[in-house]
Length: 355
Image (cartoon, rainbow, N blue to C red; front, side, top):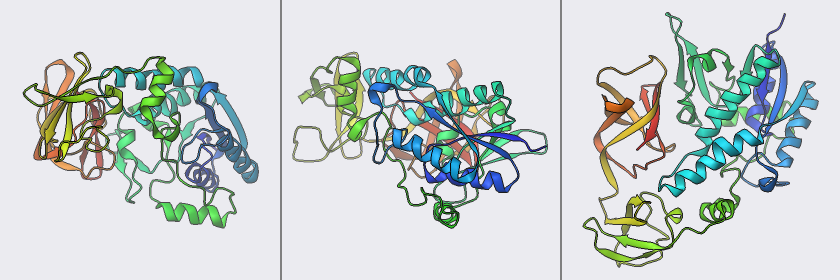
């Protein structure tokens, strides 16, 4: 009897091709689209985003074309609590969160796997570009996809239980190969653009979204230098992130960068060229994949942003369930609230949230 798979389908080309590959591999596949955005943030179409009504319709049509069932399940309450509210709270605290990682952690692999079990499925599946394997001792591992589309950075929080019950059929494919498979199969989404923006924030305007969501406007405050001298006024901390140079709203005659956001005192520290680099960081909310806990220093390659190149570093466990990451070379724009993800070659060692 074929194993039953609940496949998360966004209406894009990746999850659609994942359905195609799973069917070819002999699985009994049901497509499932998660209704995530509350009604207030739902759009007919989200150009460059995801989770719109058109996306749900695209997923439904692909499932019909492939001859598989399609479910639309409502997770709007969990999404607002674990993603939108978290996003707003982090920005108010002067941090820059990654809502896509929160969504993967709580919704696409947390709530989805729980729902799949209730409905009697053996596995969940997604269209992510990453590779899940198992070592000789039975430990489940996550590895970087060999193609440039690798998405392992946003998957570092996966647990052993989640990895054991998740399929990622696109792991060894490139994006052009996926599009070619979709085209050969005549799938309507073969040339649909990739999602780019945060799905619940229109036009990528975080500050305006936060003002609407919270009902309050971030108060103006002071720009200061590293010595605390006032340099000018900022528009509110939600308009800024670490490493930002453009759009400061004030001219200094030379490049100046955001180096610190102090939500308590409503201050933003600016520094000259070079000040946007850091040689070390602290991280908490950790998850390790090849082992449960880190009990001694470990040489890794670390990424402080999705698009960053992995950089040589040493992880050292410190008090409070945190790690210190010391880089061989200083890294640009180390941003509190973002994820730092650790690698050993292609193996994802784990990751955490930058403090």
